[in-house]
Length: 226
Ligand code: SAH
Image (cartoon, rainbow, N blue to C red; front, top):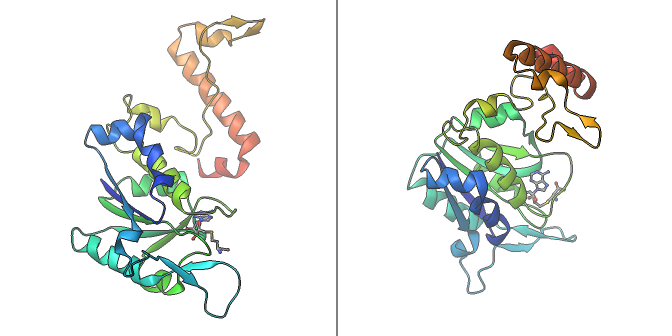
């Protein structure tokens, strides 16, 4: 998979890709992440990527020209499955969308900043718009990192134990069951006996019960889909 992240603040998005699972995925060659500085597509000496809003009002707007030049340049190098604009009013990002995206080959994630991008970018240049939740961030960079993380860990081979993504919350419309590690007794707070029993079928049964119980309590709507 190849992900291009377009941003006017590359440093804001870099560090999550330089550690842990996302770093390993790149090292293994399972994903290529390219962070592109929108300013290198600016047309003036000041490297401007934003300007005042027509009609007045507070806040700068990201200009269409550098974004278009950047996207056209990328498109001349490969074919993209989706060009996704990070937007608080976009489609709500979920585990099921993460699953879908993990099967794609080439993606562009476009990060807005300030008041957002000129509306014509949304009308003519992107194929999809995605939000990570009903709240407003200062920029799309953190959203792009969140989406990339959720997607990249689903690419086969990225997690060392491949079944581990499958047993995560939301993956089968169930919340994950509780997990424990040593010590078995900490200040009298004990690990459930069944987990120490070594009885695999009973452990599986217990995990399913706990997962169902937890889903019922925390995400009741999800159980209907299970
Ligand atoms: N004026 C816009 C918000 C702009 S926030 C509005 O009221 O809708 C600046 C940028 O941050 C946006 O262009 C978008 O790229 C990003 N952003 C903010 N909140 C986001 C969210 N919940 N999900 C994804 N991207 C978000």
